[in-house]
Length: 244
Length: 276
Ligand SMILES: Nc1ncnc2c1ncn2[C@@H]1O[C@H](COP(=O)(O)OP(=O)(O)OP(=O)(O)O)[C@@H](O)[C@H]1O
Ligand SMILES: [Mg+2]
Image (cartoon, rainbow over all chains, first blue to last red; front, top):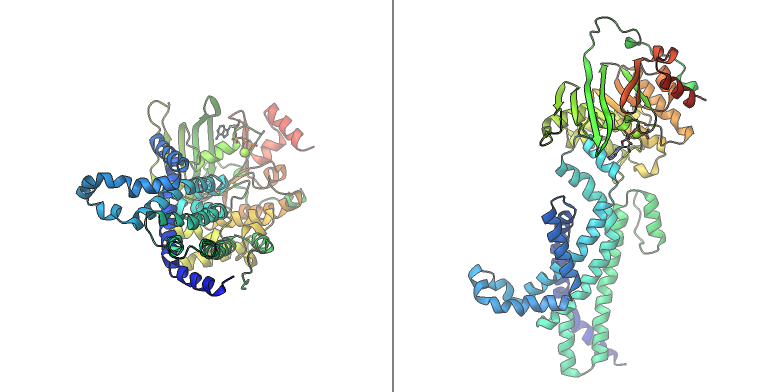
């Protein structure tokens, strides 16, 4: 084992970490908003809206992310004149934006199913109590439905975030030099596939280690009572200090 | 029910005066409600004056909950005239054409003036006891936070839960949760309280603490409509009793009279069945 080489590789790859994090973060945020909108459309009583949401989820869940990415980056290039006319070309020419678009649209599809589950699991009684004290639909959603749905959906959504972090590695296929992209470049230069990819894998593992902890901490912080908190602590995943 | 033995101080409608000067808080006439093909309420008329405590009795499925839920428009009545705390609404006589939409501000006024307490408490589990109680006063009635907090602490003290204000509902017993729900209703400064079987989801040993609170509310002259299976409450606390049968008022009158000599055979059977 060449530990010096491993160390150097690790440091080189670490330089690409911000880009990987940027891709994951921006697409997760856009994707979460999209997921919420899709879930609301899906649950709405307006049939066209619900059908559109279902079709969207069907398409984006049923096709490979890699092909979605290629379609957006390479495929849309064919429509360059029209995109230029619409002023959208600078966006679709940029591989980073294309990656974010593909990741966000993909996670929105998966996420919407999780969010829908959360929204549907909000106790009917809590909503009725909100109606009964005169809350408008908007107020009700903001103060009662969304907070409760978030707490229900969070554990499952954490999974989706982990998937997203790993999916950013696909960006390397359209010339982006994030962690996997740099790893590929190093391998082309040195042919030391094993060490380099192991380092890359370790970096993803590290990100997801931190991410898992963040989600659990959030869950702990949001859990409405200490009983749930204690269970979370017993899972052994969190060692958050209980203050007060 | 040892708890129910003392009678109310002032029993205004036990002996209805010819000219009752008290303002009418609730007046319903010809209230109808169907779910699909099943007609649940078949023309209910009901009145409650200021200070009345009306017990609503009836077998399961007789439409008690539906009646109560129509009063604050948790269900939209199909027909009838409702006058709730000064808001008068006539529902379309026949379901020809669109359902009329009750205007939002009117709805808010009705719902904050007629506060509801549910069988299953329905507290908001992500909020502390205090947050549950101040939610509607701040968010719906838009009263200043400091005032709401002070009032909330007073109503919580009133239901005996002042020291629980920073606890979450999941950590309270059923009886305590229901008392929080009552405090939450009181915090809106309602003119009428609607109770839908407030003790039915409770373990027998917890029923008493909730009934005690409800009795103290009755004693201070609150207007209350109470759907209940607690015969002790109906007999000794409520001023009037309404017995529903298959969507119609089968028996109605001052509680003392109704229980002493029931006119309807069905009501007689009902009392006998429940009070064994
Ligand atoms: N949302 C609804 N959709 C369809 N049917 C309903 C609905 N709500 C109530 N019903 C029906 O209406 C009838 C009366 O129901 P309601 O809940 O008012 O009875 P209740 O007198 O409160 O009975 P209980 O003592 O069991 O609470 C029942 O047959 C019930 O099945
Ligand atoms: Mg009922």
